[in-house]
Image (tube, rainbow, N blue to C red):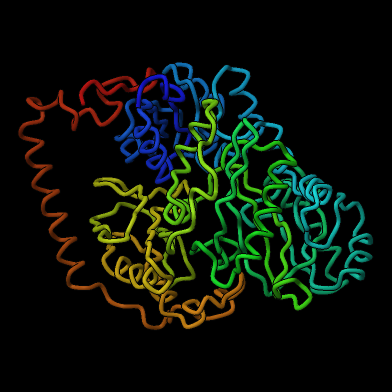
Length: 520
């Protein structure tokens, strides 16, 4: 690629973990220099080691670092970055940060502040979708002022209902109501949580559809008016409204239903003048009166790259990170949906540092040893690296294990193999749960809904396995070699102090001034 094809020269990644690694790779493939930012807890993290430059932006807590918009912008200005990629989470859907980038003359890799603001307000987005002809879940399109109004709406649409925060996300600010006598307390609790979590106490009423499936449509739109839909992903395997497994295409979604949902997603993108990658999320349920026996309604739009984007990349032959970068740099998307037909099946398991045998309790600390899965049809987007542990300050996601197959059955078989090969010593992970889910009869048949995991025992917690001999030997070998390395370092520390290993990203060069790699 020549210089005039590169959308810009230098990109700062305002994130951490596996998504920062993924963005660095996408940028590097386009010939773009990369800048990592890091907190004190992430000084030796994988994304810091991979980037061309790295800048410390604060203490270990998110508020001190990755949520500190001023520190991120200062790092971008200091390193001469042309653009900022926010990844997902943190500042990715922060209207003020997107606007601050624009005012500073720095490209924000994502949609406009106006689109983020519109779709981030669930009440306003529901109102906009209704005007655009996108089906919405029955409920209100105005803020709820009086619990009595909620009772009147519930009497009309039927119980159960959900009281939801307008500015909510991540499953917060939601209360499920089964009867009228629960409404007043539910409204109060939802408002209080919304104020604490989002600084906005507005709530609304929505019909709680269950059982239903969580199906989302990937959209990509450029500034030339091109809006491309790249099919659906099924995200119905959830626990406490957090996605566990995603796949594309979705089991049981007909070509007719896909076309209807893609038309709605296109209308949603155009209604908010959307550019960049985005995801329009729907609930899908059985309806004998619908054209093909299924109906759907708008849930929300995520104005960023999704965690589960790799499954779409594998079945559609696209690179969504590069698409984001090109669009942000003013280039046209360059392909149509017809030129990227669905091929095969892809599935993603979110591997988290949690103990599934203890109700997914967090597991933090150093990783003694790990062996990653690979082989035909396997992709791993990971933050794991030697000497890197899991911090209590951030999300528990450590990697995304993705498999591809010609058929769904082959994809599942490959996932089972890959999960069996993937080994992490020193922490508990969600791998045993995913292995059990791959053997679950209903999951294998594609017959699950958003509450299926919570309502069924997927993993037999009474049969927790003891540590295998292989794992024990691997851990012993790791600690033995670490001890030898430490002893050697004590002997020859002075002679080797100037090297890459001794510098540890910021020990040799003042982190406040940014760290710049000087060798290949």
